[in-house]
Length: 440
Image 1 (cartoon, rainbow, N blue to C red):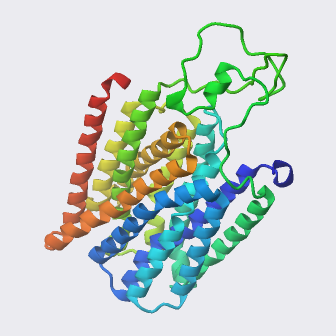
Image 2: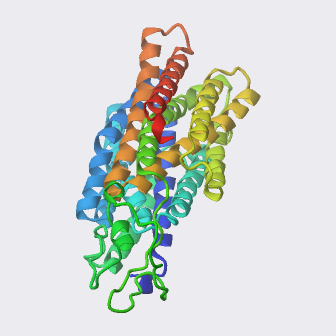
């Protein structure tokens, strides 16, 4: 495949960029569309966001499993096709309930894209190369999401309300053509996830261990002859040949699994906050008298802060398996969320967005990195990572919407309720760390 299409990873990043542009524009500005066309207020949009999260939470894991079994490109074809068909129907839809159905089908299709894109860019990476690759992955989707939100309001005003549907469809059709081309060039055997290689010669103990799941690897010997030098990975020499492989990741497996559990706990809480903020942006725009165009400009600050955080974490690996950095990010997330929704001045909201984006960046990066670093089944672990995101997309709007429903006299009741939930998540992280103290 490499000889025919160059570096396949670049093509995977192109797919990711297209997916982020199309889905970000549609899902971020759907709330503006529903507010303008059907009079949705904060409570209605929060209910819509909660439904979106419920569908994503329920199906994303299956989307990852599907790709693990039938091939990543096949899963991507299914997902992008479903999004194209649903949004084409949305172009001519004229009822609020019809658009709710369109959103649910589009979300279902998206469940087959993100887990398998994550798996595609992670599959076959060595422990040393994985942080670099995931850093690029995070920067691509975050940058495209920031661009989509920044320009989305202006596009909606310039191209009209229905551009919410036909513009993502145009992007997704390009994406679908690229998927079909990559699948054809890869061939029928390379669409499926890689299997562990079989040895034609007797491998070394270190080489065999590197091909086992992390929790099944035997301890490596502390002495003995070094591996023979060769001309790259897989070089064999002599009667008792050894396979040269990259060194194993030095972190203890118990510590790694603990951080994976903490990241899977914290990431849904981060998305509780994110999707509460995104769903009430039309309300914030109304409060500060911003048009959709200027709401896109102003409320995209945290998106760029998140993308910048991804870049910094990509350059510096010192945050890996460091509890203080993880906990500090969670505190930034909580403080930033409260500032964005409760601050009375735009300047304070701007500063709060920066803190919010930085906290979200490290928590999301942690969840994806630990999922791929610890897991052998990339598609399935990517699906679990995305399902955890779906839980947050559902939980935040559901909690905020319920608070507004039962206490409609207080416009900030939803934000206060979600902030309390974030504090519960903080306590849960501390408890998890206390129970696994020996791993730190």
